[in-house]
Length: 389
Image (cartoon, rainbow, N blue to C red; front, side, top):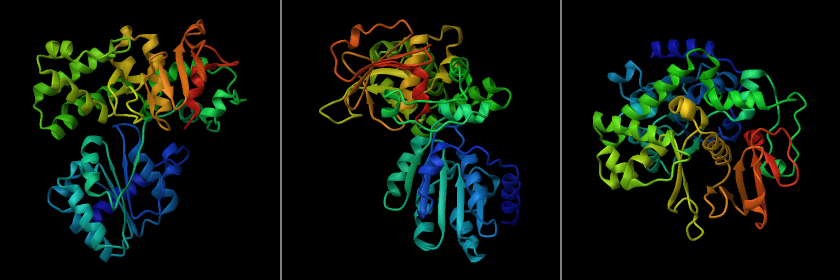
């Protein structure tokens, strides 16, 4: 255990707390067991180390990663028992999905040690969701996604701004004195600003590693798929990346990938849960999220530029950004008349020359335009939807 504390303190010493992600203030840190999920690369490890550095005493706190060599020969329940005997009160476990039967052992730890608080993270959202059902009466689950445009401005350019609600944005209440011309920075964000690691070098290499690990390791491991199927998942993602946006024809895709039609639907669900794509569904009988898939987007615009490159479609990029940023707070569904519906609001997305034709006769309808700095009446700048979190 001494070695675990030594590794933990080294990590903590190198942790910067100047910029902290949006989800930190949403978590009830007083809960006895907290689970934090999110795709690879969005900053979960940094967030929990920042929390420890700001709010905990290292004498009764321990951070470990479940993919470390220690757990090749040691059990999590035994670590927790020894930690509590030495006065431990706060146990943070990173990459929990790398540990076999993790949910069963976390239940035992929770029940055996009532004075111990546990925080765990997982990048394999599929596996975490399955395990979280076993912990439904114990763990409080939170999800985390990549940087908003607001967070990007703070982390990359030291430009601070408050968050704005959807109603604030629609009422033209956005005011950022330190950001006179947002469009050049917004363009950079769409290409490389979603993942916090982009502030370092070799962002293309790291993003490709995230994509490959997700499709070739995380999903096949969860679903019991072989390496050949992992390659088919990459082919499917490439098809989606080059579409405008992608309207699923599962039969056609099945022919291209040489798999059954039912497998394609399963593959899309796996890739969606792993944070690589977003499936836009129709609203069915008032129950959001259960409708038929209308369109499939890549999860965020950085993936578009990484996978499609010169074939990246501007219209696809705009819609992907809007869906990615607004889904944090709302159930976003497809509309038969415009691009998106959020509650009783309707949104048509386009460039600066987009007309009012499609929304002319629709109540509570808005035209969201790219390449404009300011809005007017029912016309809203696209970039402002990146200020919501």
